[in-house]
Length: 223
Ligand SMILES: [Zn+2]
Ligand SMILES: [Zn+2]
Image (tube, rainbow, N blue to C red; front, side):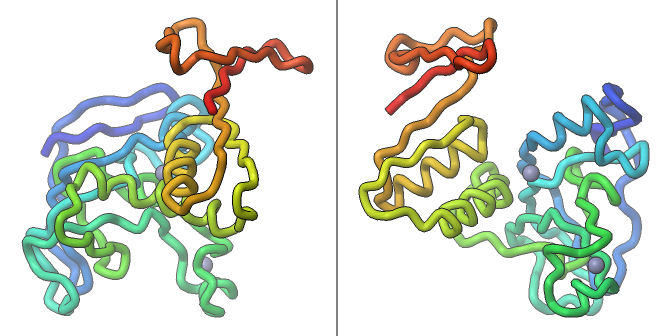
């Protein structure tokens, strides 16, 4: 199958590799339809911070169609659209055993400790995928993981009605947080992002340029 593999810092290669082999009884086979490029993918590519094995197929924001289920999988069937749970917790540490796998002491991630979604095919335990509601396209469903971060932000922030909210950074997480907060009726929202020399925003979007007094960064504010 075609895949993009990380071989080391700054070494990303488009390759033909063997597709995942026989399915374990508790696993599902997924034909990847959409995969996001996370900020952590870029960071890992540049620094190797989460590079625990190479070569590895990165990509943890994955949506795809189940094409085959293992013998013991009854909760999914072929043809269903699913997204991957990006976490790969150990299931054995104290936090995992106490029902808090989100703070696993040995947490790894799909696309880091095992091959991820920058490929045509993916094989995952059925417990690590979630069904996508009918009518949601794969390219939207692939945003489920970063959207989960934005939902968590909105829930933790619990803003007062009509209180202004500053969102520092308008990458995918900041943008999704803005969409969620606006959808929930909060705001006004103020979103800032860094102006790069290569970026030429439309006059409407770059209406209020700011300079930071403590560093040399230029920022743009849109209200
Ligand atoms: Zn991500
Ligand atoms: Zn654990």
